[in-house]
Image (cartoon, rainbow, N blue to C red; front, top):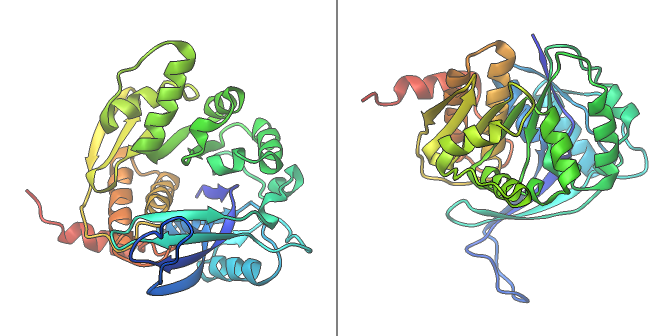
Length: 320
């Protein structure tokens, strides 16, 4: 079965649950806190729990954070291909989670940014594999340069999956165009997709008039490599997928959110696992919607459900 290879940053989240964000210069008391492996780990764990074979290709440091990342990957049967950075630890992301599940981030940079083409090469992608790229890798020169060089020499038949993140729309025109031209599958939330469309329209003087998941997914697909597929999600509303010239809305499964941190990652991980298995686009998106719905009911970033839990949820969901 094809593998899922993630080139992005495996980090550690320091998560604090707060009643509200403090005003500038003020303090707030957290009701709880925890340390958990996150970043690319979230997607890989979600995919592995749905039966995929997964590889972390981005580098991991040494020290407490790096050890925590490696332990989390090993617990799910996920391998890491690059050699550890011997004199630097993995970075930390500070996450403040509010009562409605919304989260705010502050990310530090560590060993995960000391990427190289040689490190990525150790993942040895082969035709059929799905290589996952995050926009956050493209936002920093230390990771952008080796990643772009490596992507340019990927074997034919390797699918490139772009998870753009909030930063992608703000990247240079050249960086965005090069990445979009290599992208086989785009998967993002609605705000991220609308942002890249707005930037493209400004640059070209054209307007798509895209509004909502379906129109936005169709418009984004036209920016990708020939035959590229775009998936745009909007939380409990579900997602839209544009593939093979057709756009399909796939309804979501609204839940009372406890923690939205990692919900998009859970969606992406389940989606990739289904694609690796050969599942059709609509069913893969439906299972990804279920995965995200279950995840928001759980605290912590890498708390995606197993394939069996997705099956049970879908079987119990009321039919019209």
